[in-house]
Image (cartoon, rainbow, N blue to C red; front, side, top):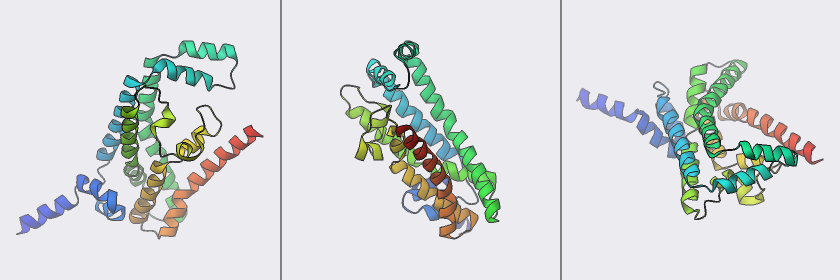
Length: 243
């Protein structure tokens, strides 16, 4: 009887179960992960799906077309500088840079986020370690798996291979509303506002609320503060360029 009970408890708090639960009940999922954060699972899944999508992209994209678009987007550069940049671009270089950005960038961003939560917790006078912040950032990044799968679908649906990076996520504000071309002042800004960003914020709020034992409004304030600052500065810079 005891053995059955222990097995049920182990199964109910397993990382795989928590991952599935995160889809429909993130508060419960973070409660399950409180004692056993198992960061390796979401970290590996996010890194592998991101890398896999990028490898598929570069294996099917019309690279000469992509290179021309990238060079043309360098509107601030002179014709000579654009020509030199185009000559330096190679498929291997762009692919390697993109893969390293995904594989290295994900844990680096999680480290920065973990540090932010540590500082924010001290300001709020609640107990929350860097390790908890890192784990929260990694678990909250699992929407990247969804956006990677959407990217794979976009790649498979493209018959010509003429698909730029922003088109890999058709659920961004840019693709849904504005459709700014690559190189536009606002393209990256509105590309960054997408369904993955919204889901990431929701998971961060839920996780911080559960693990830091704070009310929902306090968790929302802590999570949204860096987004408001970053996007506010970004928008101000874009507006200054347009002025």
